[in-house]
Amino acid sequence: MTDSEVRKVIRLVAASPHSWADATTRGVAEAAKTIRDLGSATITRRDALIDGGQIVLYRVQLEVSFRLDRERDVAGTDHQTVQVRRYLVIANKTLSSPDLANAISERQAAGPCEFHLVVPATSDAARWASVAA
Image (tube, rainbow, N blue to C red):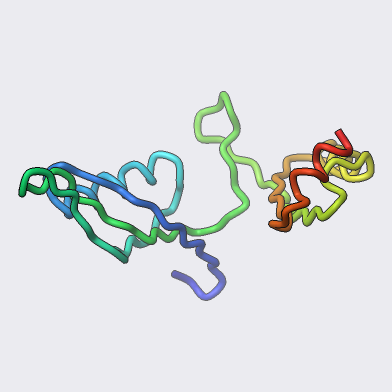
């Protein structure tokens, strides 16, 4: 890890009928299919399912880290990447508003980008989306 590098940590659960080591290997292999630049995997929990006095499934909870970057693969090309702009959208009662839709459309038209949406977890959240729809 370099001084300027930022890493994200996600939690996942993997399982194997053979061992905790195999469950860990399977979890990392599955994560590597869709996440670039995996850096580490930490086992935070282990357990096993038992049936008839025998272990039938070994499970591990992993925290997997990977480098955050702005490069994304271009679909239909051989390893070509493009740099994207990231936007964090915090939508309270504005989730389905025309103003928010227009702002997102403008940013999409300006070039490659990705959006991350945060909506407060309240009992009104579902109602806000359906009222404006």
